[in-house]
Structures are given as structure tokens and as C-alpha cells.
Length: 361
Image 1 (tube, one colour):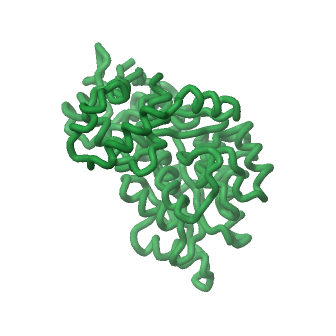
Image 2 (cartoon, one colour):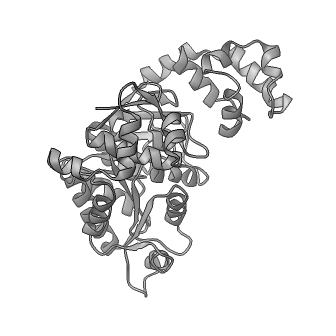
């Protein structure tokens, strides 16, 4: 079973994501990797013998049926890199999660989203801004992504839920663990009305190392990141760095020069982040770039298509085409292709098919 093989590949201690992907690249599918003989595996290039032996030992002992049954019994779902639900925006990361565990509405992973992050020790000002911005984004049919930490993250999720909007919490622990415990009610609300996801195994306790790792997913799932409050060495600045590396917009909310919580955000603005004194700054910027919103007329949708998007539509007209062909023929970077395809799907002009194939409608 493909899903079980992905579960196994993601759980091998001592085999990191990059090594696992290098091993997988030498086979046409994960099924072929899992069924290859020990000798074939040991001949894999670019991977140490010790790591290959670790893989073989784990593969021969791993009970994927028991693993899947255990997840099901806990009410936990999972997707993997071959899943239709797995977002293309995460596939293009340098170290994409092999498996994502989830509770809630998995379809939210492929909706247009904006991340909101900031200080755990937020001020009243920061909490109010986070709540109101999330409220405005959700009311505009954007999914709000955050990390469910105290302070800014908490208010972002609450602000989205307050207007029956969509929100995703990316956790730095197992998806079955509520952290912090004070957010149990929020955790339950997101489970019922949004999505909880994690790349960490169920029952994984939160630790300091996990949070920078999860931050790349918050930015990876988002069209842009809003930093509401951040001290000079805040973890939120790591999220901003990830967003810049991924070609995403970084929005920063200015704050009092006397506030430690505003030193990081004010510095981001000096470095070129978009000064964001109202949520409309975010909405206008994103609408200007891609005509995001679904409530525009069909005429507006088609009029707003860029020349780049028209080129993709022309390539994808007729028979379905693979994303690799779109990259080859258009000459655009794969990150740009993924972004354009997402918006074309939202506009109802391109359909995504299994296996990363696309077809113009």
C-alpha cells in the first residue's frame, strides 16, 4: 500500500528528508523502492552504506498495516507527497515533509491562504491587530494560517473563526497533542471547523527545535506572511526569512519604537517588508498580483488573466500536461508555475488532475 510505504519512509531514524528523497529519486515510484531487493538498494548512489542498511532493516520490519490502523483508531488522517491533497507549494520546498498528519478538513490545504505570526508575549495592541486582520482576511475568503501559539497566533485563529472563516494550525508537536494546554478550547474549535496539521509523529512532544522546522510550512502554505509583533530575535523572523526564500510577500505591522515587541517588525519594514497599517494593504497587494477572490464575475476573472497565465492555459489546452512540461515550455521557475496554477484553479480556468497533471477548462 502506497500510503503505508510513505509512512515507513518518513519514520526511519537516521534517514533525513533529503536522503530519503535522494533514495526515492533512483526509482520510478515508492512501490518500486519498497519492493527492490536488498542488493539493489545497497547499490544506490550518493547515500552511505550505513543509511542504506538502516533503510533495509526498517523496511523489512515495518508493519504499515498496523501503523495505518493505529492512526485510524486515533482519528488521525495522513497525506503523503503522492497524495492529490498534498499542496504543490510544499512539494517545491527544499525539504518538503514526506508525510503530513492531520485532524479536520484536509481540503483547506489547497485554498488561498495568508499566514499571521508574532510574539507569544503579545501586547493588547498586537492581539487586537492580529484578531482584526484575521477577521478581515477570513471575511475575504482567505484561509488564515498560524501556529496556535499563545499571543498573536491564538488571536489570528480566533479572528478567522469569529466570522466562520477558514483557518489552519501548523503544530510543532504531534497533531494529537494540544500545545499550549491553555488553548484546548481553540484546538477543539479548529479541529471541528478548520484544520490541524503536523509533520511530527503523533505523541511527539513539543520542543524548541520543532518550531523553526514547522515555520517553513506556515510560510509554504501561504501567499504571504503578516508579522504582527516580533522582538529582535523572535522566531517569527525565521518565518519571514522562509517566506522571502520561497518568494512570498512579507507584511510587517509597525509598532511603537519604545516597544521591544515592535523592534523586529520595524526592522523588517526598514529592510523592505511591506508596511501594513490596515488589512486592506494585504488584500489590495494580493488582489493586485493575482485577482484572488472568487466573488468576482466571470468576465472579471478572464479579464484579469496575465500574459504568463494565458501562456500556461495555452500549453494545458487539449490533453492534460504534467507540471514538468509546463516548466519546460514556459521557462518559468517551478515556484512561479505552482503559484500561477493555484490561482488559475481558483478562477476555474485550470483543473488539477492526479499525478500533478493539469488541464485547461
